[in-house]
Length: 182
Image (cartoon, rainbow, N blue to C red):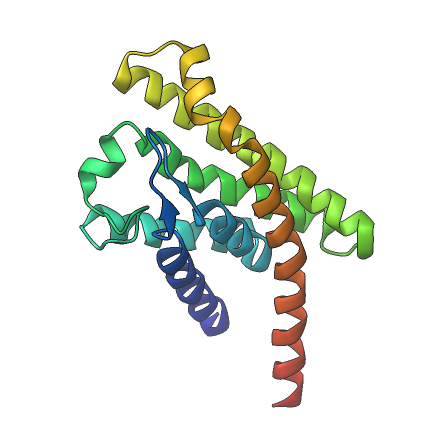
């Protein structure tokens, strides 16, 4: 249990360090948050990955500058992009949970493809929540919101998912090896 708690805290810290690194485009900045959330979900699993995201969101909500562009505060969560921030919770839960269910025991290309499928399904829910909230707050149509907040991000989010799918199992193996050597 201690190992899981420490790993969860470390992943929350990783998200908090990587998410602020962003390209400030409007209305939604490009950041490393989705990569960090997916890495955490694949590394920790759905439950603990979601807990790490929850810690990250709580830190940001109370004002710690962990959101894109080194911002923080509750106003970010209720602002136009808040649905995407909250959407990180189901992204972690779905992606990490499906990976644990489908792909954790697989190897090679099959594992990678199952991880990518899990990431795509989780990201679809993230996009749905974020887009719905953006439409509500900004009084935009779904098509306008998709053009502004989703379509430009598809290639980058696929690349971030692939990077997380490649890195998380490698880090998990390294951690297991280090534990066996103790």
